Length: 344
Ligand code: NAP
Image (cartoon, rainbow, N blue to C red; front, side):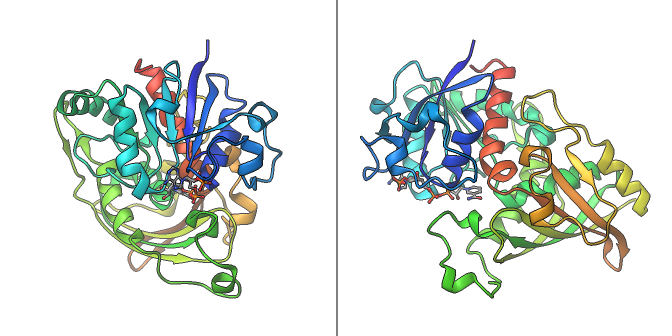
């Protein structure tokens, strides 16, 4: 039997990816699509400026888009995937949770709240148990789970793969695709023939979210990991796929071969959207590259290359598809975890 699900912000860049991933999903059935007032009460095909590169699934094309409010979504929908701007999500998501819905969200609001699990299932599936505390504290029948920022998702699994060596200090520089800013995010006049060494608020998200993801949950509270992370974020004129240069200093020494082996052995999970292998190591020194490597594992794998010893510990480059592994696919994976753990 499939679970009836809805997508909040279904017309946007991440919302469209959610439609693309959920339409053929064996465990979920799309039963509601919502967007802003200007798109509501229209057929999805007439208001979604479809740009994913694959055809719009016929099963959703004629569905009516609803306004983003609990009364507009049918009671038999159990799980909502949220791809709303955080300014909207900060009030709307809690209203849905209060009304009894489970919400798996991409938006940055509440990611660092103590009672909100911030989850990459392959890294910290056990943090989902924070939902019991959240429900007690907030009195919700529903619940809210978050996935991290798209750039955080790209490098944190690689750090977790190296945890046996004692990861102490990390520097990460990102080269982020334009789709990460949404359709109206960066104008073509700004980005063509250019690189922009600033993405508002992004560095602090990488620095704080990574410590929460790698932190430990003892059943009653979550402790942040003590790792020091310093980030620098850049927007470049690629369409999809965030590339990151990472320097890792550890308490135990590690060789290039140790790193390669740890990455290759890092386990995937028995969830529908978890790719095997999760981390794909490339030998060529000029890989990974966004155009060549972003679709590995149906866009859910993380590619790593250029592993070498450097003045600041081990250095490597990693890459993930920002709207799939970094956003829509990450929320779907969290939905699959909720299902596996009996929350649905
Ligand atoms: P987007 O393309 O701008 O889409 C925003 C969506 O929200 C649209 O469906 C829009 O509907 C809807 N919306 C806007 N204002 C609304 C309102 N007042 N009430 C109800 N719905 C409203 O944004 P995006 O890039 O998909 O990002 C969505 C969220 O995911 C953001 O929080 C973003 O930070 C996060 N995220 C994005 C990425 C990425 O790679 N793009 C990665 C990780 C996380 P209309 O079409 O009707 O305006």
